[in-house]
Amino acid sequence: MKQFSHGKFGYNHKRKIRITRSQYSHARLKCSDSRFASDPQYIFALLNWIEKETILSTINIAERKRKQVPMKAGQIINRSSFKSLLSDKELYACFKTIRGTPQYFREMTLDILAKIRQYGPPTFFMTFSAAEFKWTDIIKIVAKQFGENLDDETINNMSWSTKVKYLKLNPVTVARQIDYWFNCLWKNVVMSGLHPIGQVLNYDDRREYQDRGAQHMHVTVHIEGAPQFDESSDEKITAFIDRYITCEIPNSISHKSLHDTVISVQKHNHTNSCLKGKQISCRYNAPWPPTLNTLIIRSNSDKKTLNKSKKVLKKVFNEISSLGINVHGYTVNNVLERINITYDEYKECLLFMSKSSSILYKRKPSEVLIVPYNTVLLNTWQGNMNIQFVTGIYGVIMYLTSYLCKPERTISELMNAASKEATSLPIREKLLKIGNVFQRSREVSLHQAIALTISIPLRHSNIDVIFVPTGPKEMRTRIIKPGLIKGNANDPETTDIYCPNLLDKYSKRPDDLEDLCLADFASNYSEFVHNPKIDDE
Image (cartoon, rainbow, N blue to C red; front, side, top):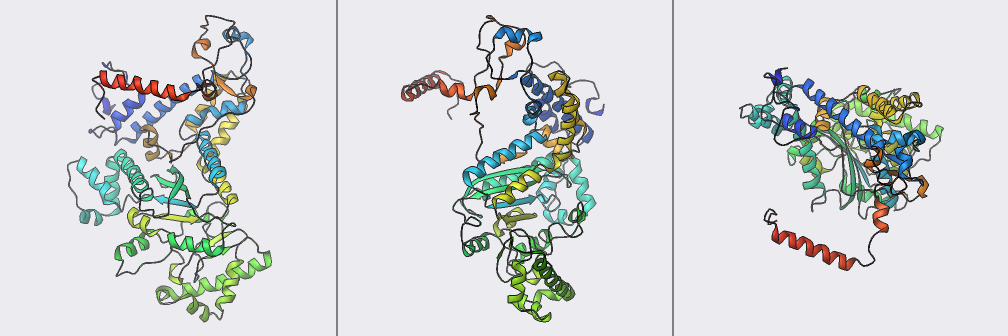
């Protein structure tokens, strides 16, 4: 193998300090020697190796899970008289700790639904896509690793194929840099005192790699004090939307940089994705109708009214299309005059153009293909983004259940089928079979493999969710102490067989916390004073 030409320094090489598989993978892929990071086969081999170990570790934990029923240590040691009390669904859910599995993202969905119950529907739903061919910094960093110093002008003048060549030199660096850009955008802009979309109360983002291969982000955001759909007045909602969302093409002279960015990354271009499935028209509903003001569309149209609205809109879009490049000089009223329709008639059609509630953002005829954006975020991000005001709880739940987990739907079905086929098998063999299906039946891009291998997070949130089992004791899942599974028990009659959980720790809390806090402070202070290894920090 070219990476180890002398047959030394693999994972099993003898070292003074033992390292984990994860540490070994990090060291190899982040090494200054790019022979590891530039080899996709080596990266996928590392991912397969790490996931196998993670699945085995998960299975070891799953074997120790039991329902909390009265039981003695001797009953566990005597395996012939003991059977697992977990259902197939609970066994299937054991994989929720493995990143990328359907169960992992279902856990995220449940966390978001818990926050919706606490805070109400999110205010915004946003999408950000990486612009690795537009961002010159990424190619600069990769080129510098190979002894080249490139400037922005040189990179901007490169052909597409040349940029691809540089991005392939070290895909690990590219993936890490894209993730760094996402984190900087969120930490230094969205969550900063600038408040470009308002004061963020809570956010949940998921990083995806499908189709493009490179990382892109979907995020739901709760904004403090934001108006709620169907609760606040339409005037208040539209004023709030116009404050943070726009579809405007900026002036090419006074705002040249933003103008160029909007034209290059925010203009919708129809692709194969638009006609996904049985779609006969763009599934994103582009182009979008031009309006003088932001409008709220209610789900109150019948079939006859809907068809009438579609005919009027078709006339409007045909007229806009016939104007070509000259459309930039026309207003909404100018276009309507050409087809002999008043704005009031047109507005009535707009208000009944859909069977579901939605937002029509303020647009000129020249902006019907511009995706909604926030000026501060787009100017900072310099890549494609989309921001939408959430119109209701039903839409959010439908999105969370059908979209956030969409890449894992097929895998989920295959894993379920494997679980049913292995009904009669022991727990370990059954989980191994399900785990093998997960590893062998999915598509993983190179950047996703890198993220999974070097622990780049697939989800982020500023508020964590902790599940507290409050059901009856006999319905709670507990983990048996490790020694009992191995057959070690000093007292076969003892009922103390479970590892302490959150409820156990809570029930054993002291009545007076003040003395406990002072004792902990005194202990920590004493250790700080007498331990020379502790930093001054």
